[in-house]
Image 1 (cartoon, rainbow, N blue to C red):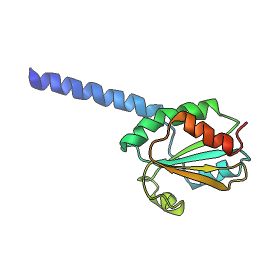
Image 2 (cartoon, helix red, strand yellow):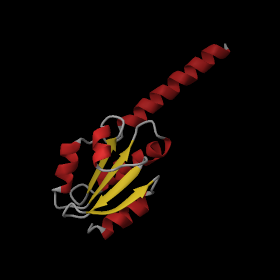
Image 3 (cartoon, one colour):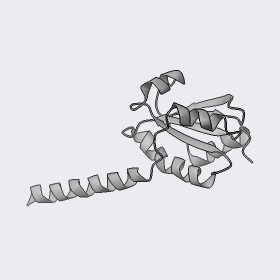
Length: 130
């Protein structure tokens, strides 16, 4: 009976994990980041991994900001385990790392570790978000 309950709980947890990840931003490639930087809008590029605990905590925040700021700013996520060369190109040393760019695509600031929504918005406003 205990094995059955454990298996049921594990299955339920797996389904919840799949459902939660379905709402996450897809991983950006080099072309997507370059397009965001050339868009004339401020950008936050988040570099992380799907299995990283702080990255998982940030996923719903990034998705929410992506919806709320559509047309005003760009929010990208890059899974460094899927595209390690892109992480290397942007000199990512730990995950998660957020890089804030102004509307001209110039890097303004980096943050390493979890960052909450209000601090992301503060940095995007400093980068020119209106």
